[in-house]
Length: 176
Length: 176
DNA sequence: GATGTATGGTATCGACTCGATACTTTTAAA
DNA sequence: TTTAAAAGTATCGAGTCGATACCATACATC
Image 1 (tube, protein in one colour):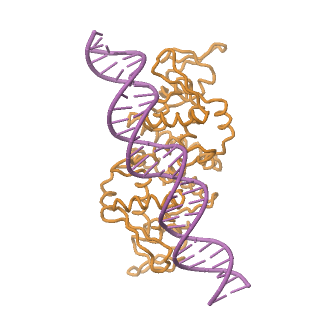
Image 2 (image 1 turned 120 degrees about the vertical axis):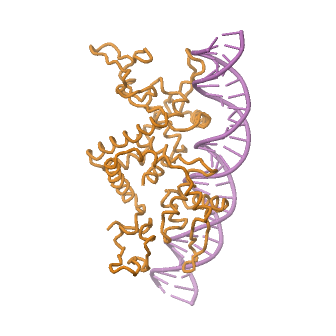
Image 3 (image 1 turned 135 degrees about the vertical axis):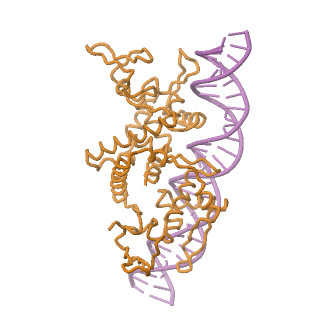
């Protein structure tokens, strides 16, 4: 049952000339903070090799949905970002199968499923030494700005975080 | 989270020269009863088109893992079955990611997850007019042999069912 | 019974996935 | 300074996958 549901969900997204993986990459880039929008992080998220992700990114760039820029500090890094076209496409995208599956469920059921899935996925990723990812604000390195007015901070990277950063997915996240 | 877990699970199975879909087809054929081992049923199970499944089956036949035979009654039908090589390969297959995810969970959690997934998947498939599949013995057409010694029966197809049939997956299954 | 339509399956095509391998550039460590 | 590690790209080949067109068989309606 788990494998069947997984196949239906993962095979979803043959629309607008894109492929399922490309949609998922687009959604990740829209939800990830600036430190996590790199080919390497995308590969970790999608569970693919660097080479495959490099191709996927190239395809998205050809379509004008994603832009690549180098990093000034570490010149090995490539920063990825959605272009305006990418944003609009994602905003106009139809509901995913996953959303269609979750939508009719009772709120209590959804919450229970979320908790179970989080335990299952988290345990698995830890056992296989994979990155867990997670919301920046739930991280043990997250330092909330208590007074207001100042930005929050990341104690691991030592950088300021604005509100949108703190609500985004981060590759370095470790549960508090 | 759901889409990420789905991708990890569905992308699992790049071993022994087979692809993820091919493994899943093999597992389906091993678990399905004789009425459900056709290309069409496989397509419904995998959520793919007939053409794609035709290719997958052809690849498995080339590898000598699956055998195709015509049906005497309805000559449009193709019956699929695992060859002995297919059986041994499946028996020696390493654990799937789905199994690795489920294995360390507490029995109560696993049961709760199963119930939630069943509701979610069942609701979705019904809403999209897809086949639900399910275990033969849980079907409203299943007529258990009360006395023992005689085979069970399927009231829909009007055929006898032995023990292994009744424990297999059936495409015609409708929950009792 | 003949005709029309639905059903089950295959063939072919093109874009893309995906891992494997080899490679370059850049950073960090010994 | 040498060495190793990390981030990314290029290229290859087998295979996926949907789309379209097509064939054979079964069934329904006249």
